[in-house]
Amino acid sequence: MNSFWLDSIENSTNFNKLEKDISTDVCIVGAGIFGLTCGYYLTKQGYNVVILEKEPDIASKTTGHTTAKITSQHNLIYKYLIDSLGVSMAQKYLYANQDAIENIAKIIEEEKIDCDFKRQDSYVYTNNLDELEKIKLENEAVNSLGFKSEFVTSAPLPFDILGAIKFPNQAEFNPIKYAYGLAKCITSSGIGSLGDSASSASSPVVDSSSGANSVGAGSTEDELVEVSSSNASLIESNRNNNFFASNSTEPNNSYSINSTSPINSFTESSDKHINSFRVTKGTGKIYTDTFVQNIKKEDDEFIASCKDYVVRSKYVILACHYPFIDRLGYYFLKMYQSTSYIIAVDIGDKAFDGMYINSEQPTFSYRFVNYNGSNEKRLLLVGRCRS
Image 1 (cartoon, rainbow, N blue to C red):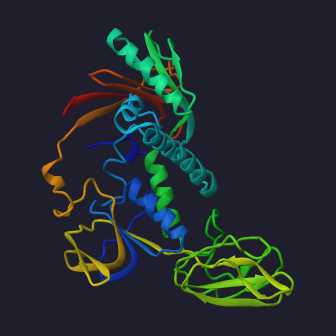
Image 2 (tube, one colour):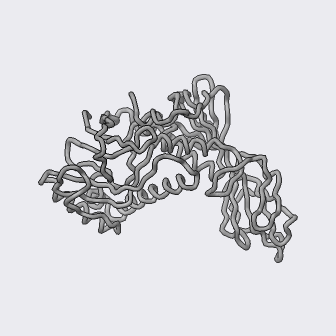
Image 3 (cartoon, one colour):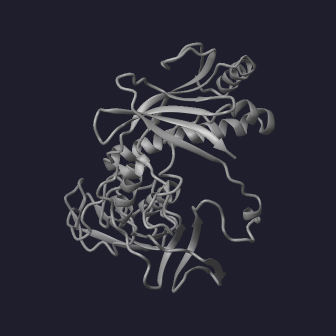
């Protein structure tokens, strides 16, 4: 099936098929936005990660066939959550999603991912009198959770509405450009500070506070973290790594510390406080056209079987459409198909701001996208066809 998003990538990164047995810390099954996000954060934290994708390209299924709204507004859900699960759970759901929006924005800024990210207000609207009261009650519920949503009777849409609940400062992006940006971060080797892009692994680590070189900072399969403090007391790690620290009072000295337990501080003596803590970045590898047939546990490791080869790991994350291992709840018996279609429409110079979905059935959704990397706009129009 064609996808506007997939067509927006001209020179996509080519990934290899798995052609040997390998071992890693974490095996992730599925290279959509969920699997890639997990891989991004895990490599940042020093874990070696292998991502397996059965399709020839990453992010080519759900991620590549979505309206790509980044929002905590999921139709009219918060009154339902309060009524069914309580205020605390509804609040956690809301702010977990709000945090996710900001985390995506942070990754895009720090990693300089060009993915057409733009802040937008999000609306759930209605022209049905029976739905209007539901929207008003939803607005009251959301505000009771501490989030400032707004009930409005007009919107930038080209038609009138009876009412809508507006979530300010949400966002939209190109999910495929973002996914390939994550993939580049995951698979790039080297040394970089926490929150910074990775640099070359072959370069010595330079402590900016003292000018000391910590050369040969262990394997490139671990993460680099740099902290400036008097004693690095905020650093904790549960990874079995070699840590390298530089002493600001003696800039020519570096210290190699092997640790298998959380590290709370580094001090050689009372007058030698280490103020820089570093460990190399985790490696990430992505294999496409690699179908995982089965996962089993043997002793203290998981084995993912991929036809002729296996991936051994300490941990497994299933980031595919649904857990395909039968013993985990028989999900294949509980799944049902729900299908919607999206079309991209040229409506000339009548583009409008915002992201929209109606509250009743049938469902319609609207947002605009840049077409072919230009300022030319296309309307993404969604209608539910069958379920």
